[in-house]
Image (cartoon, rainbow, N blue to C red; front, side):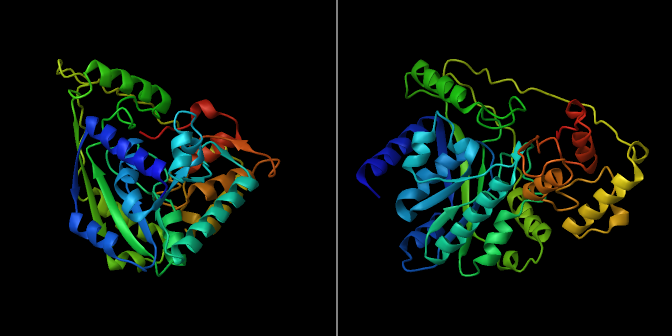
Length: 355
């Protein structure tokens, strides 16, 4: 690594410790990984609680292991941090949360192949199995598929699980506002708070990062649902908690957490033409392997049917008038079978929003 990025990473580590008190579990195992030479690449699989955890992991792993983080393009191209993303050689991955098109799908598959090839050559990657920030206290992978596919294509790669605890409640997490954090705004607020606290008196958040080799039976899982189930059980075996930390040393006041509830809209089978319902159920059954007769409007696309964001995007495109065009949507709201029909009908305001 060049001198300037190395110095920058040391500065980042110092800055992070102004706000965070970091405890690492599995230090001996991590030191062992750092000592091993001429070994297959490592695929680190962390949970994703807040936008702070990728930077924290990079500050720990970049210098000794030269990891390359894979992150969503929307995060990578954020003007507030793009310079840093390029500096630490982040691999931008297409995001299917709000838009889908054929070009985006092809770019994604190409990047996946690049990761597989690089792992075989001994490179190390950080890949978030969930592909996004968690929106509830427990980790849910549902139909996410990238980690499963890459691990199957890279049997020689070493899998390392990472669990970060203590960030649920941070303003860089989904917890306080029940919305995606505004990275630029949070960085600005944080800089102001640091100086208000005279730099060294900033209240610190205690976080714990656990490193452990993936269990052997993780690779043995044949389906993504089973693979994700093993990962989810490990991520959630130690319950996380909502942790609110004051922003100023002179006050014990903690941030307020919004309680946003929404009614779940209901769509009845009677509201859909029989031909359309059968056609969509057949496609869902083909994509998921789930019996067509058992698919219902209330089924979760990810958790029950095991569909990932690419497959949901393909469904949206397949039943849209022009498959070659970009289609705007919000997969955070398209979580049930009925939400697909609501999208096609154009009733976006009635989408069921995941709590």
